[in-house]
Image (cartoon, rainbow, N blue to C red; front, side, top):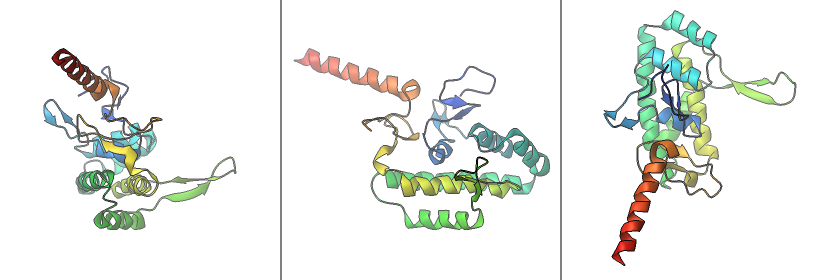
Length: 209
């Protein structure tokens, strides 16, 4: 796994994968399976804050403020565990939704509960034209706000036929290609491997003729 300070693939940012083309999917992808097995990329509050910064959800000052106030607290640890639990519930819900089963009732209930407790805020843009949504994290639990909102918008607005799990690994992505026929998470991670395998199959079939 790439680490901060080392040469990284464009799919990685500060040690995290960002190839889902949707925040909720990038969050689900924080527990990928590498050659050494499943890897937890957000094992503690520090890593969780780094992921939020890498995702563009927190500024450095916001992250530092949360760490200074909550750092090693039980609330921070509990939030990390709750985030991990939410991620795994979302993984199951997304996988079912991708296969055409619709959004699970339990997923809807889960997200609506989080949205009620941790709602996004709306403000007029600085230009005075249009509005934008934002959140102001003051405590660890506030970090649920953008994740719940992103997951809700994924289910509500995205085409489930373009959301899928990679054919080669456990990562999920939203296909933004023109044809919508992509089946691998990334050319750099799985795309080349799949193309090489397909080429080998074609060669074997050709020699059998």
